Length: 130
Image (cartoon, rainbow, N blue to C red; front, side):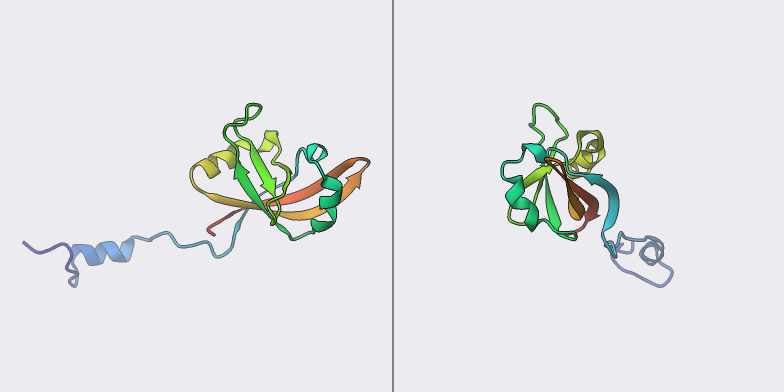
């Protein structure tokens, strides 16, 4: 009986190797969603934080599964680990499931503007491999 680990011309493993396509890394991050940051009116010091949030800045997404008001909660932090707000509750369920499955997500600031006492921060959310 031949060993399966041997690859011979016309053998089973050679056939499998030529037909099986292994997953490859993303050539670029996968865009998932455009939304706004929720809860900025409840962030202490948001006025001082605002000048340091610029379009293109990468924001970290952290799951908060124990949040009593939202089991799918996802906090948003800037690069200095300062809380910016949350992914909106109406849009976080699928993102939370992806994160719970070990997928890496991040956000990028697209825009910001003051609307009276509310800082509106637009973000794009991406799936990444790093």
